[in-house]
Amino acid sequence: MTGAVGRVGAILMRHVYLWRGSWTRLFDLVYWPLLQVMVWGFMTEFLAGKSSWVAQAGGVFIGAVLLWDVLVRGQFGMTLSMLEEMWSRNFANLFVSPLRPWEFATALMCLSIARSLIGVIPAALLAIPLFGYSIFGLGLPLLAFWTLLLVFGWGVGLALCGLLVRFGLAAESYAWASIFVLAPFSGVYYPISTLPAWLQPFAWSLPTTYIFEGMRAVMIGGALDWRMLVGALLLDLVYVALGYAVFLWAFRRARERGTLLASGE
Amino acid sequence: MAGPERAQYNAAMSKPIIEVRDLRKSFAGAIAVDGISFVAARGAITGLLGGNGAGKTTTIGMLLGLILPSSGSIAVMGEDMVRHRHRVLPRMNFSSPYVDFPARLSVRETLEVFGRLYGVRDRAARIARLAGDLHLRRFLEQRAGSLSAGQKTRLALAKALINTPELLLLDEPTASLDPDTGDWIRAYLEAYRRETGATILLASHNMAEVERLCDEVLMMRAGRIVDRGTPDALRARFGRDNMEQVFLDIARAGEATP
Image 1: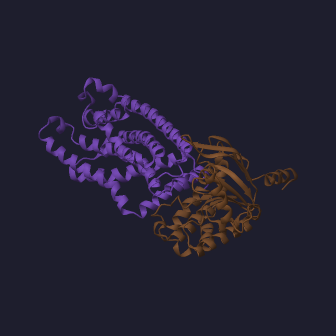
Image 2: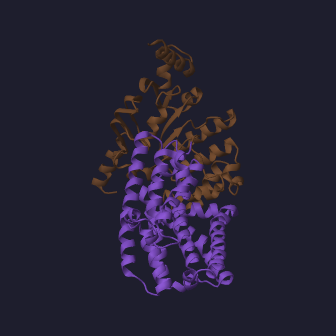
Image 3: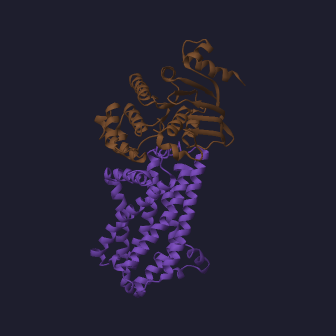
């Protein structure tokens, strides 16, 4: 296997080798989603007896926390894979090889798919016996929500990888924390109409808003709102394009500033 | 090979493998490389010599396409390294003690990953050959992070040779090694050049290394090439017995200049 596919495969192999030799990294992938599902599952059980809305929309919080984790794992999948190269001071070795930036970005996207599946599926399975809720009951819309959240995670992840290339490990904390800034404006656990009117236009500029509103429409109304899916898809494309532009810009700036040779230090 | 193809091949082979013209690089106003020009002939070992901050590593970074020049041109194997570096990167490689490998990957896994990155076809055979040549066989399943300095240097060299490069760029290839391991690495590089006809450019502070390996030496100071020649010619010109004294003369001449 040669060419671009082989080089993307090389980066994937590097992380498979890493995961295979490090159970702590594998545990880290599933730990938070499991914990989140348990907290929100018990919260749902408590609130179901007190709120008719929660009783009617059984599992809406668990569904939301699982899908939110798809986004978080998707973004972490990109930035953590990038950080692994920086922590190990391997970055220059990669980029003096024939590996191109878009091939590296493609490998990061594949890794984010793997991380989201490894992280979220065990938590989703746990919710079935523990709380009698199966997110798989969403059916095909689940696949659409999952994909759209992952793609948005790639957009954010690419921009954050750009920051890491440009500023090195000084930007590490942004790689961990940035995605959570979006949670209050994405309507993860409540409808967007809850937000003050002046904040709502900003919320509707995020694909996550369309996805979580769409999820609630399926779970409460039993119908898929295609406008939500199309809105999320169009915004996803915009954010991925912006994220990739930031990544390429940062890569060029790092070549101008000579930081690729010293990244990680 | 047919007539026209043979002529094209001969023309390509007779061209210098590296052509650098009036190359400059400054970082936020500080000049790191200041208008250097040189060529490296195919099959030659060229040494970049200079004190700390002379511009050696920046020059190597630009030759690899990792650092963009402020001005000037770099052609490697006839390709412009600013615009078309990916055309020649599969035919070159690099090693530096300042770049590391993933600590948790074994030696075999590390070489497997880089073999794939460079599109090496028979990776298992190539890894076995390099492991034998570089005395890494018994460390193949050991994690890179647990290797000694000498073993790590041999791993770095194995990675740098995984694609049997025509051009090898080495930044201080024997830094922090004991004299025996350093001597062994130098002998291996000589043998590799002899067997493959590869071109090697190395940056070093080790004068004995430069004296032994290099066909031509470029003496750098404050981003400029201040002298050049074969080690014999430089020694004769400075009236010195060895390259260490030549190096000191050049470095101290720079200190005397306001």
